[in-house]
Amino acid sequence: MNPSQYPVLGMMSGTSLDGLDMALCLFSKEDNRWHYMVEKAETVAYPTILRSKLSRATELSGWELTRLDIDLGNFMADAVNIFLKTTTCKPLLLASHGHTVFHRPDLGITTQIGNGAVLAAKTGIRTVCDFRSMDVALGGQGAPLVPIGDQLLFGNYDFCLNLGGFCNISYNENGQRRAFDIAPCNMALNTLAEQKGAPYDADGKWARTGNRHVALWNELNQLEYYRKEGTAKSLGKEWYDSHFAPLLEKNNCSEDDKLRTVTEHIAFQIGKVLEVHAGAQVLLTGGGALNTFLVESIQKETSKQVVVPDLETVNFKEAIIFAFLGLLRRNDEINVLQSVTGARQDCSSGAIY
Image 1 (cartoon, rainbow, N blue to C red):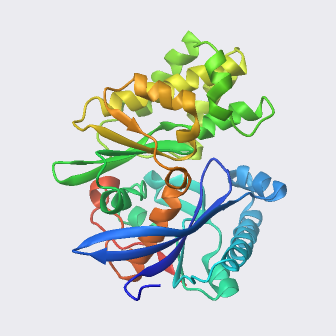
Image 2: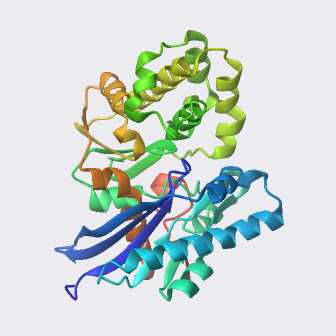
């Protein structure tokens, strides 16, 4: 390892519950620009019982949630220790996003579990976690956090669009980074696929065979969130459960039709955002970038060029960026932008163990 390189292991547990993404990255800075390379990356699936508990974490008692925080921390630590056995590159830092349970910035609340103290104690590696709380305390949305990484690591693209549990976008406007959640994405699509007995709709094949359900299409597009002005706005599972999911449940049509309607709804909302901003290239990442029907649907809604990068970037971009956010926190540098979250000021956020 070059002495000017910083090895950091980034960890991401998304709302779509695909598993724990881990990316061991080497960061370097030359001519005032950050660069990275991925030494090793891997996704570890959650055991069935743990995944089930995470999926209903919002319904648990205080005691049960505290226990789950510890259990997830132990699972993460064990995963890290196994992951590092097959590489000679040892990280100076772990940067863990954790798993979001509650996100109500309007009430000053954001909760990510996956106990950082357990991670640090069981791995023996300094750990940065709880990246959102400081921004929420400063009056911000606590999300999205990825945009500073988009700006500093992927700045050659005009737009960075992540298709995860929710789809979110970031871009530069008048010299400032802007970013926000656009709509639910894999959280909705995977839920519908599970009703057909699969964890996700591979390549969007079921959505492709379905038909748009007009009533559902209209109701989804009339949701109040899409009329919110400005960019300091974010979505969480509570919003999905109370506003989006009930519309899927009450409309009596086939799962294939629902998948088609939701896929085209996601693409339509993305297109609305893209078409009012200048720029040429859109970088697509996250699990949804592997859904060919969704990608095709997005391209139909925009005149901009949609770019799906290499598989490593698609699958691990958020883990890469959280590794970077952890490094910035270690260096006491800004890692959350008020222009994105609406907070009173930029901050260097994250608890360190």
